[in-house]
Each structure stands twice: as structure tokens, then as C-alpha cells.
Amino acid sequence: MAERELVLATHDLGYSYAPGRYAIRHLDLTLRRGEVLGLLGRNGAGKTTTVRLLTTLLPPTEGSATVLGQDLRRAGRALRGRLGVVLQSESLDFVTVERNLTLYAFLWGVPREVAKSRAEEMIELFELDAARRRKPWALSGGERRRFQVARELMHDMEILFLDEPTVGLDAIARRRILGYLKERARGGLSIVFTTHILHEADTLCEKIAVLHQGRLIALDTAESLKKRHGGAREISLEFADPISAAVRTEFRLALGDRPAILLAPVEGASVPDRGLVLRAEHAEELLPWISAWALAHRLELTRVSIEEATLEGAFLGMIGTDGANASEASPSPGGEGPLRPGGGAL
Amino acid sequence: MTLPPVVRLVVRNFASNLDPLTVIIRFGQPAITIIVLGTVFTNLIPSTATNGQSYTAFLVPGMVAFQMITGGVVSGNLFWLDRRWAMVEQIFSGPFLRAEYLLGLVLTTLLFALVGVGVMVLVGIPLIGLPALTPLGLGVVLLTVGLGGIFFAGLLIALGTQLRSANAYFTIQSFLQLFVIFLSTVYYPASSAPPALAAIFYANPLTYAANTIRDAFANTLGFGDVQALAVLAGLAALAFGAAIWGFRRMELGPIQ
Image (cartoon, rainbow over all chains, first blue to last red; front, top):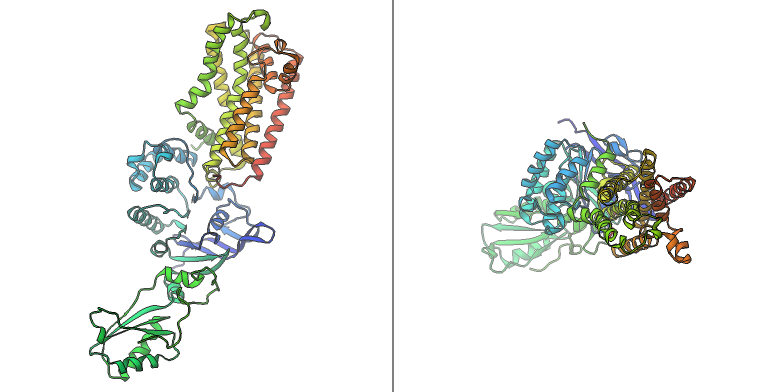
């Protein structure tokens, strides 16, 4: 498949708000047409600054960037006219929700008839029908956020920047918005999306950029990040016959210096005497060894399951639970400290 | 056909400011002032105090001058609310320039002031008859109100760029409005005021605006009015310069 057109590329991009004090630094990102890029990071990691830099709301103090073929440092109105931005802060005009939508479309030069039908579409899509005659300050937090996103979608754009668009939304509204965004991305809209809800990023984003303390510490697909940084996960093994205590001990010793621990049998489990549960880093990589060990001990494995890796696990693996890790591309176990080789209790 | 960005911004400024309460406060209040104060005080204040004319005839040009404050306050408040509710940032994330946003505020000021002038004249005509306005006089009235409006808008926008508290902004704005209106010749002539107060009146641009508009209404424009217009133009440039300075240095993010 032909590679999609590059719509955004930054090189060593940075912003310093005071001499020597950087909100973001050495940022190298790319975004292709129809791609959804997730920006993840703790509060203050530099996500909003990145959005504001890429939308020309802040001038970069170092590095360079090209957005839709235009140099970010020189770009102005012409570029902004091709972008959509839902900022983190609530913004509103003091008119009804419906009027806000059409007024915003008018600001963007959307023809009246198009604006009218699009407003209806957005009101339905974002479930704002009951609120259409209300002024934005009379809306609930979730309604207001939905309104913000709906308003931005009133005009055409090539890249949509969304800074925490789903804050305060219920699960159904979130699902609906994410579904719609996914559909728009399939239609060629490129999206930059910041969120603290990592499951959302996993669902929506093709590529994830993890920012920490103003630096980009990872840029990859969610799957790859989970694989590389997902940390320790549980592997459950089930055998055809009961496992004796001696075999368990032997298994534990055999683990040797592998980064895995054998867990005690789970009480109440349906097959405690026929099962082994261990917790391991790079769980998939351990499977061939487990299989070979079972074969060597004439044990028939009837089921092997590996706990699904989560983006949250990968995220915590990258930045640590106290946020102090952040060593680039150095996988660390998910939030529990390194596993002791061959350790663990029977 | 897509309208120019400045026009779209002005339409948006009007649309978000045309709720009935705003209209009543901005235009109804001075109109009621003309009707009530004019009628009541005409019988109380001798015409000798108001250069031989009725108090209503004295008050109408004063309230026309007052429209420069109306226009200025509308834009100043609009800017403040745009900043407070992050619309400044949202607008700048779209296809607009800062200069266009400011120009949009200037045009909004002028249009609001112009509508105000029309309303005051229309309310005044049944009470004082047609003023002796020549085309030049009409031009001077509009220029005076326009320059005065830009002065007040500039002053309030400059203030809005510096303050981070809504309380502080609206308190200062109200006090400013109160003092500027009452320490001017809008409601009473400087000649009737004690000398110290009269001196303060003449440090107030609204006094020059009110006097010039009175001269235009009476068709007695002279060199003094040209000087007044020059002073007003200088003050408008100064205040708007301060607004531009503050605007360029202002952080775009919302304020709480």
C-alpha cells in the first residue's frame, strides 16, 4: 500500500517560556493523512504546549515544523484555515447552543445552508437536542464538552487537534465521539488527540507519542508500545494432569534468571492442582521455553493464556508510577519494580 | 461569497451582544435619561444656566456624546469576556489575524456608537425638534463620537489585557464610567460648576466631545472644536496604542 501523504513533521521543535526553562523540547513527530496521533503524558508533560505550537498559537523557540506543507514559523491564517482546534479550555459565545454552532460556522465562512444542516447533524450526533435553546453556561460539564467538539466540527479541516476532548463525558458519549472521529479519520482527516484516558488512545490512535517532562520518550503504535513497555503480565498454564509440588519447585528453579516469578496457586481456581500461574516480562518470549520445558517433563499443556497487555501498563512502564522513569526506549516492568529473576513463591 | 474576516468578526460581535438586556441597558438607559431627566429638569433648571436653551435641548447632545462610552464599553467588555471565556484563543486558532480581531472591535465600537447616536437623536427630536445640524455638523458629531469611542474602547481593552480578575475589571470599568460621565459637561455646563470641578471637567475628553457636539447641534462650530477634535484624536491614538501594546504582550490562554 502506498504510504500516505505526510501532513505534519516536526524536527527538534521546542518552546521555552523563560531562558533555560522549556515546556517542550527536542520534539520529533510525524503525522500522515488520515492518521490519528495520540499525545499521552502526565499533567504538565507538554501536551497542550505541543498542540498550541502546532496550531500557531505559540511561536516555537527552537527547531522547525512543517504543517500541511507550510513552515510553522511563517504560517498564519492560510494554515489555520485548514486546521480545527478543540482547546482544553472551554470557550463560548453568549448565545444559545444552536446559535453558537451557526455563528461559529459563519466565522469560518461556511455557507448558511451548509451551516444549518451541519448544525442539525452535530446536534443529533452529540446529543445536544435538549440543550439547543440553552446558553452554554446552563449546560452540564459533559454537555459543554460535547458542544465544544461539535462546534469545531462545523467547518472543514484537514487536521483536527483535540486537547482532552472527552473530559467529563460519560462512556456512551465518549464511545460515540470516538466512533465518529474514527470514521472521519477513515475519510482522510488527520487527528492529533491528547487524553489521559489511555484506553481511548488505544482504541482511536494509530500512533502514540508519549511525552514526559517536556520530552518525547516514545513514538510508536499502541501495539508496539504495549509489547515493548507493557511490563510484567500473567501467564496461565493448564496441564492435562495434576502438577505435584516437586514439579512446581522444579519449574521455579528452571525459571532461573528469567524475568519471571511463579505465583502461588489461586485459591478457588477451578484447576489449581493442574495449573501454574507466573508473572513475566516479555511474556510472549517466554512461551517457547515453557513449551520446551513441558515437553521435556512429559507434561501435556492443555491451555496457555497471557494477560492482555494494556497501554496503561506500557505508559506506566515508560514513566514509572512516580513519573521518575522516562528513560527513552528502556522497557521497565509495569509499576511494580523489576521482577526478581527466578524468584517468587510456590 | 465569503465575507472578509473583519466583517465576519463584527457580525459575530454584534450577534453575541444583541440580547435584549444588553440593548435595553446600552440604548434604553440614556434614552430614558433624556425623557425623564430632560422633562423633569427643564422646569427646574433655568435656561440661563444652559446657554439660553431648555435643559432637554442641552441634554440631548450630551447623551449623544455619551454614546462614545456605550460603544467603548461594549467593545471593552466583549474583549474581556472573550478573554475570560477563551474565545480570543479560539478565534486565533482560526483564520484570523490579531489585527483583524482588534479592527473588528474598533468597528463594533463605531457601529454601536452610531446606532446609539441615531437612537438619541430619534428620542430627542420629539422633545426638542430637529437640531440645526449641517452635513458638516453631522460629520463632526460622528467623528467626535467615533474618536471618543475608540478612546474608551482602547482604554478598556488595554485594561483588559493587564487584569486577570473579572471583579477588578468590572469595578474599574464602572468607576471609570461613573466619574467620566459625571465629571463632564454631559449633564450640566462647566460654567455652572465650582471652579475646581470645572477644571476637572476640562481634563475629561467627554467634556470636549459633549461641547463639540453641542456646537454642531447649534451650528456654531469654531476653531475650538477643531482643537477639541485634535485632542480627542490624540487621546484615541494613545489609548488604542496602549491596547495594541497590551494585546501583543498578552498571553492567549484563558483567565479564571
